[in-house]
Length: 102
Image 1 (cartoon, rainbow, N blue to C red):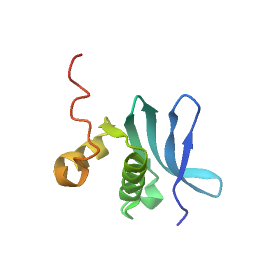
Image 2: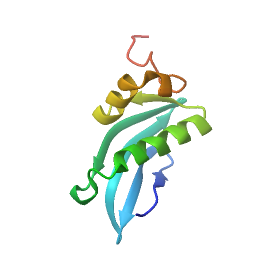
Image 3: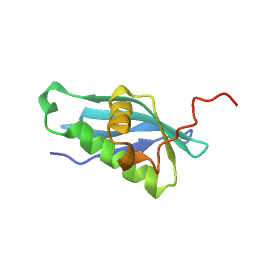
């Protein structure tokens, strides 16, 4: 199985992704701004479903957030569910205040 790569443009938008034969087969769409990493969407091709690829994307994103002192805003349903199911695993990077008015 191919490794996960990060593609982030100069404005902080991009994704963690996996390619196979030049085609993206898994992707977690993100943006990085103001010390936050926002996860918008996670998608895995039908061929790779059930093989733990979403979890690999999540683990890679979490490691990146920790290494770069970022707080995660989980707008993606998959990531949001994981953060709610396992708060102890993610409390150090979870941005609990992102939805509060300023």
